Image (spheres, rainbow, N blue to C red):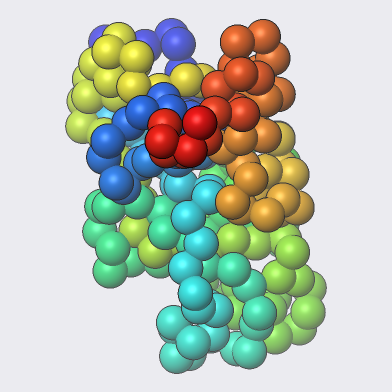
Length: 185
């Protein structure tokens, strides 16, 4: 059974004391949630590399690469705003698209029809098997938030978790201001 609590295009915010180092204070954009499982990408764990250094055949292109999650860390994925130009893109929500024809993407980059500000690349992804995310939601591991494209394309990735918590209001504002380590209080 698929949970009605979460849906494609929402953000999963790790509860503040999650111990799993892959998801500590992670903000995950959920791109697929269905009967067979769920897929998303961590938006706030940047890697110190550019896509053209990671993929030899990619044209010179100064775009951020992020750690998408612990699953298949030998794969590259991308989220972007140019779904109308990139065949095979899947809409995620709020003007954000997932994937598309990689050869066409390289052409768009070379032709400057897509700019680094319009796309984010990810190494690996975050995945949940059938029912796993629903179980984690029941345990309180995640807080669901609305997605704003600014989280992915215009913000310092280190501030995404805090900002998304803050934007939820009420008690979440207090959580957003909590230090990462309790000893910092």
